[in-house]
Structures are given as C-alpha cells and as structure tokens.
Image (cartoon, rainbow, N blue to C red; front, side, top):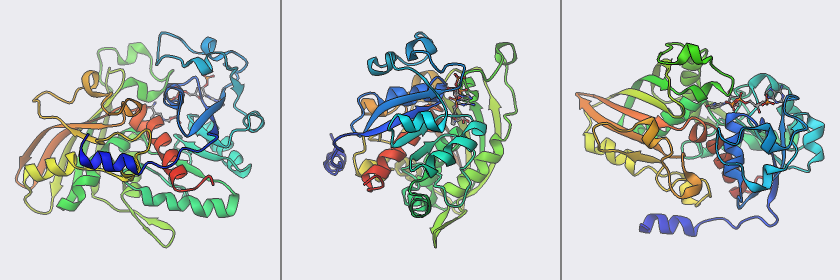
Amino acid sequence: MSTRSAAARKEKPMNPTPRIKAAVLGCTGLVGRQFIRMLDAHPYFELVALSSSPRSAGKVYSRAVSEEAGPPIPEVVRLMVVREGTVEAVMRSGARVVFSALPASAAAVVEPELRRQGLFVFSNASSRRMDTDVPLLIPEVNPDHLELARDQVRRCGAAIITNSNCSTAGLVMVLKPLQDLGLRSVTVSTYQAVSGAGRRGLAAMDIAANVIPFIRDEEEKLIRETAKILGRLEFGRVEPGGPEVNASCCRVPVREGHLLGLRLDFVTDIELRDAEAALADFRGRPQERGLPSAPERPVIVRSEEDRPQPVLDAWAGWPARARGMAVSVGRLRKRGRSMGCFALVHNLVRGAAGSCLLGAELALSQGYFD
Ligand SMILES: NC(=O)c1ccc[n+]([C@@H]2O[C@H](COP(=O)([O-])OP(=O)(O)OC[C@H]3O[C@@H](n4cnc5c(N)ncnc54)[C@H](OP(=O)(O)O)[C@@H]3O)[C@@H](O)[C@H]2O)c1
C-alpha cells in the first residue's frame, strides 16, 4: 500500500455502533439491486427494509427479482418481505436513512414527505437535483456542497441529498482534476448502455444491433448538472460554474457502462503528461477519510490503445467494496490546445447507487446523523 493510501486509511472515522438503520426504495430495479449489493455487511448502515411498487410488494425478495439476472442476492435480504413504497410502510421499519431508486414521478411525492417525517433521503431520482437547497453530490468532486443540507436540516429536521445523472457522474470525475490546467470547454459524445434506461426501459427489437441517437433530456441534464456540481458554494447557494459543456447522447447495445468520448479545450497549450498526472493523482475527501465505498484511485488512466471498454473496465475500482466506483480514462491524445480521450463510468454504480451511498458515508463522517 502506498504511503498516501496508508495515511488516508488511518483517518477512517469510527464505525457507528449500532449501525444506522436504512431502507432501499425501488429495491427490485437495476439501481435498487446495486444498493442492496453495496449495503451487504456495510460497516455504517444496516438494511432493515425494502420497498417497491404494488407489483412486487408482499413477495419475499428472492421471489420478487430474478436470481440469474443482476448481482447475487445477499442472504440477509433473501427472505425479507418487500413493502409497498408508502411513507407509512417506510416509517414502520424504523429506518433513519433512505436510499431511493424510485422513478422521478414517484420520488417527487414520497421523498419530501419522508424528509418531513425526519428521515434522511439519499436519492438517484432527478426530481430534486436542481433545487437550490439540495446538494447534487459527487463526493470526490464537490464535498463542500453537502453544506446545503444543513439548511434543510434546520428547516425540516432532515434532508434530501441527490447524486447526478449517470453520464454526468463520469464526466465531472474527469473535468474536476483538469480544471486547474485551464479547462475552457468540453464536447462530449456518449455511448450509453441499455441498463441506463431501467429494467423495462427499451424494447429489445429497438436496440439490438442498433444505435439510437437520442435519450430524452440527457444532453440537458449533462449541461445543467455539470454546471451545478462544478459551481462554487457562496452564501449558502451554488453559483453555476465549470467549463462550457456541449453534449450529444446515444444509446448503444451494451449491457452496463457508459463510454464518453471527450474533446477538451484549454486556455493554453498543455502537456499531455500533466493532464495524465492530474487525472491519475486525483483524490478527494472520501479517500482522505477512508470511506468504505471510496475507491483508492477514483480515476484510473489506461495506457493500452484500445481501452477503456465497457466489458473489461466497467467494474474498475479497489478495494472490493468500491468495485465499479472508479472512472477509467484512456486514449489520451492532444492537438494544440485540445485534448481527446475516452472515459468509462459504471452507470449503475458510480453513476447511481455507489455515488449515492458514498454521499451518505460522507454525511455520516461529517456528523449529519449525530
Ligand atoms: N439506470 C441507471 O443507470 C440510472 C442512473 C442514474 C440514476 N437513475 C435513476 O434511478 C432511479 C431508478 O432507476 P432504475 O434504472 O433502477 O429503474 P428501474 O429498473 O425501472 O426500477 C424502478 C424501481 O422503482 C419501483 N417503482 C416503480 N414505480 C413505483 C411507484 N410508483 N412506487 C414505488 N416504487 C415504484 C420499481 O418497482 P417494481 O419492480 O415493483 O415495478 C423498481 O423497484 C430512476 O429515478 C432513474 O432515473 C438510474
């Protein structure tokens, strides 16, 4: 282990005893299943309740989802009965923290009500991401924005904390380390996996051997969410910032992992080795604090001519709890003041459940649940 990572692990916060009771909403969906995988034997959170739509409510979990498709089902949830996704059902479970993988329409109703009842909600849904008092958190990139949640806690006794859209999570992990080199604008083309559309997202006949050059609202989300995440926190509000973003998004017949083709324009001529070093050396507050789901290296720079690839690199990240949390970058090349590269993000992990859970670990380490 390097001196840096050894030092970082020493700062690990004390594990809470007993662990904080947590519920997963949308437990049968693609993101919900990743939450359940990552919460198995988690040192900070104890999974006490699962909820879903009336379609799955009342079934034991191992009957509500397919054993074969998706990650293995942890023993502790195998016989747990899936509850209906109502506020009352979640309240009865005794959960203090809720991890939400609900569709935006359901989240818009349930999440504010759970907050009103004093529960902390960590959400993947897009419904509250742009609210001025809601952190849009990618923990390595803008940990200071968590401060916005204090305002909610003062008013409501709890808070909603969101993470970004899946492609945005990969994009900001690359932009953040390069900002100090004078980054002016980025043009991103995405090649997004079908799992990004959810379990019932696309008809097989539409996507098999095809590319669809349209994903509703995706380009708009990439632009506005990047500006909020890279914005500056001033007087309790985020002033949008970061480089100008241009985006074109496609759906491709890949199972998991969004590939992003990037053209980055800088104010001055940069050295490729400086950009490579900035990416490879990037570390954030989760690494400093040794949080359980933090990858030791949040950005992994690949030197091979044909990487990163979704099949080979989507699960990048170490230690084991942080698999899928690292963004892989490769094919770095430069022409004048422009640099090209490809980045790969696991849409269900770093792009969804993983960033959300890491946000909760960060909040806990900063005393939000004391
Ligand atoms: N997929 C991604 O890559 C990704 C990335 C970032 C963010 N997100 C966001 O994360 C959320 C979940 O995405 P997903 O891909 O996991 O979707 P999904 O596979 O379609 O799963 C949706 C889950 O929500 C439940 N549900 C649906 N309607 C409900 C209702 N009215 N009340 C209670 N539960 C309801 C479903 O239960 P049943 O199984 O019983 O129908 C299922 O458990 C969405 O807001 C999405 O935009 C997804």
